[in-house]
Image (tube, rainbow, N blue to C red; front, side):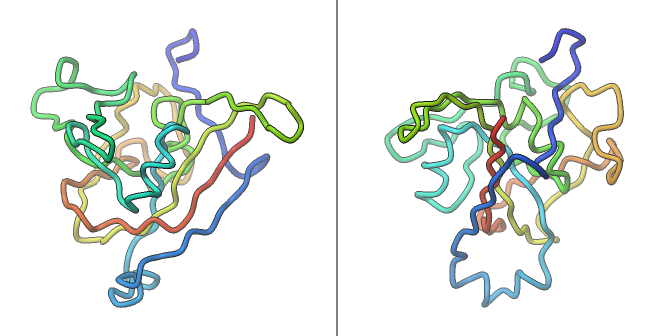
Length: 177
C-alpha cells in the first residue's frame, strides 16, 4: 500500500486492453446476459492462466490444478487477521472495476514484451456475470478511508459468495501501467 496506508485505486478505462472470452454453453441456457449482474474480480497476473484453464474462481483453501493451495491475498483479511465472524473462504467480486483493480486484488506485475524487449507493468481484472440470488453485499474490506468509486457506496462495494458455478467469466481486462 502507498505510504499513507490508502490502497491504490486505478481506473481501467485507459491504457488497457479488453479480451472477450468465450462463454460456456450454460450462459445461454441460463440467460445470464439478461438476468445476471455484471461484476469484476481482480487477480494477480500469474493467476490468469489457471483461472482460464478451469473457467472458474477458487476460494482460499482450495487446491488448484498442479497441487497449489490457494491462500488469502496479501493485504486482505486472513484467518489470523479478520473481524469477528468474517469468512475469508469465499469468492470476492465487486460491481466496481476501480475496487477490483486496487492493489490488494490486482497488484501490479512486471512482464517483458518479448518482441520489443521492453519491460512493462500491468494489472488484471476479470469481467463476469454473477447469479443475482447467489451473493451477499458488504462494505469495502481494504482499509480505504475515502470514497473508492463515486458510482458505489463504500458500504456496498464488495460482493461475496460461497456458491460454486454462479459466476460466468466473459472478459479479461489488462491495464498496462
